[in-house]
Image 1 (cartoon, helix red, strand yellow):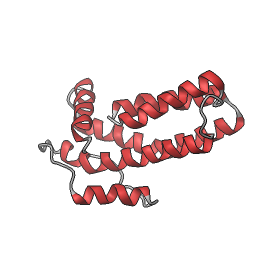
Image 2 (tube, rainbow, N blue to C red):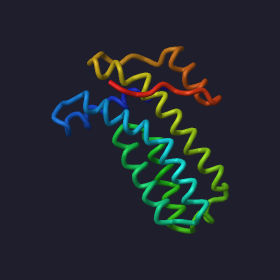
Image 3 (cartoon, rainbow, N blue to C red):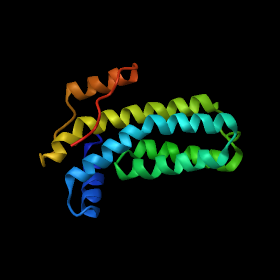
Image 4 (cartoon, rainbow, N blue to C red):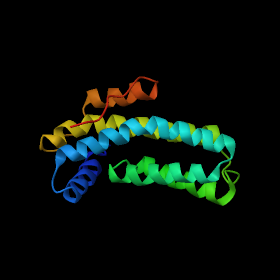
Amino acid sequence: MTREPALRRAWDALAADLGGDREAVGRFVAAWTGALGPRLLRLRAALTAGDVGDAEAVLLSLRCTSTMVGAHELAALAGRELAVVRGSGGEGDPRSPDRRLADLTTAAVVAVTRTAAVLPAWCDGEAPASVTPGSAARVSRARRGGSPPRARC
């Protein structure tokens, strides 16, 4: 099932907040994409060091910006991790911190892949299209460790 309508709604709302500037949305999505890896590395370091404050800051940023770009699954995972970190430092979740980070990383790869597959058409004002075999293959490659394309207008 495609998440394209949710992505387009999120980008339409963001564009409305930015005076209709689709290129600004593209720049924001590109910045979000570029920040995901460093954010996840910072989160790993914070969790390893037991730095709850820094982990909270990273997770809040990840949740907020992911919501803004329509990456709702990633935002939800970041929100759940935030609750774990705030509630018990991670002890309330039976999954290890490494497993939780792996889940966040997988969700990030999928979100970037979906975004990159849809954003160019949205930036050009094209009507929604369904998921194509090519975009499904990109998700599959990303899950196997391939690099997803960068998102931009």
